[in-house]
Length: 68
Image (cartoon, rainbow, N blue to C red; front, top):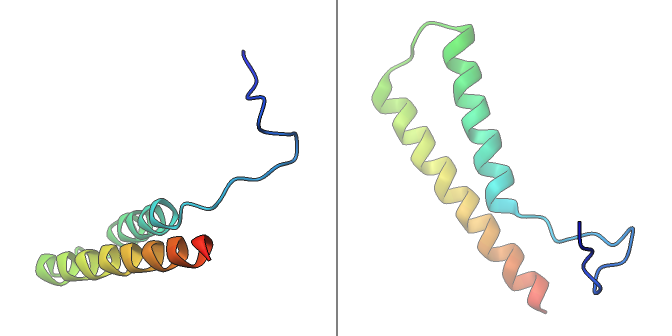
């Protein structure tokens, strides 16, 4: 296993907010379907689309803030 010469032990990498928030959204939708009767599919699709849009918005803002 080759080590990256530029990375030092203990050095962190930037958080991927899009992946983190999308993963939490899908886990939340899955848990919702497991613990209760199936909700209205159109409403859940709307929640999913809005959640993905919010995740993308946060990811864009974090990338802009990181470049400053």
